[in-house]
Image 1 (cartoon, one colour):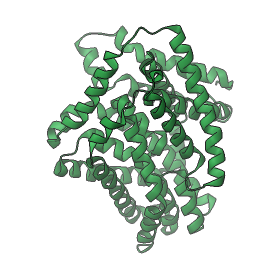
Image 2 (cartoon, helix red, strand yellow):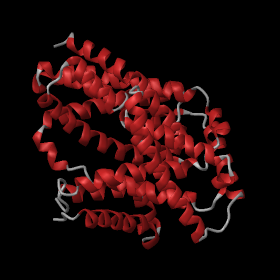
Image 3 (spheres, helix red, strand yellow):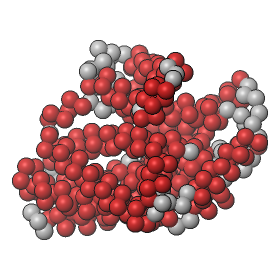
Image 4 (cartoon, one colour):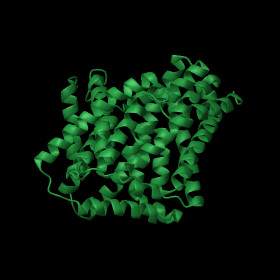
Length: 391
């Protein structure tokens, strides 16, 4: 069992690198079919979750390394991705993204109410309080959950089950969406979604990037890595300071806002045209995904099976409603998936999913995730009150 923090970090990055390179080692029709169904990004999730479950590393001993590295790399990744951002083109995506976001919010709330009614006999009639707090998190973020926990006076013992459910179910859901988004053409054809706007925005940004493509030099790599890490570190410090004076958002959200502002601002300068941003940001994207997956110990499922079943019911109801709405409203899979994860995953994972689809659309994931923080507390309290009527 790995207990050394650096060895743990080196191992997950090395394993991820091997999985990313599999399509280069295995070719042919069968390999293409396998990788179209399970692309490297999903294999990383599955592989590292299984290794975590089999106790290849000690979660407690490596926790400090994870908490030290995950967010800084995430912020650096966002900065590099945003250097290729063109807000003028992204604004053209229009109001459909908002429709998708609020559709996801409402369907999550319905999922919590229905799942509580079905499972209250197994998880306890008073579970509506902990579920209400978790609903705030799944509509917004951790800050919303803590606010609702305080408002409803939810005990730590009750929240423990909800947090186990959150950790396992949310991790599995991220993996599911990363897999599902690979079938965008099939899904969009079925819903008859008009993807011209998203495709044109993505194509325009890609064409612009290709037109400005220059050879990658070690000087570029050096300045990009150094700048990304400095922006990440500086934004974390500023985010912590601002959160102390303006607690409307938590530290993590303020940090994402500062990183986003820095990336979008520098994208307007020659700095945003430096070659290597795509390659470096993609590398960091896979490292972040590997770090997240490496903490998903599936053996924890045995500790609270009924709560985990409740979480899966919530997600299933949410998915069914979103698929129905996608068909009725002709929504594309990018809108549905990013809207869904903007609620459930927030600023930590929605940009990652958007980046996996098209790195030029990362700002969409950030903007939608920030909306969740605005409505998360009120939405969670509303759902909690509705559930209390069935207690």
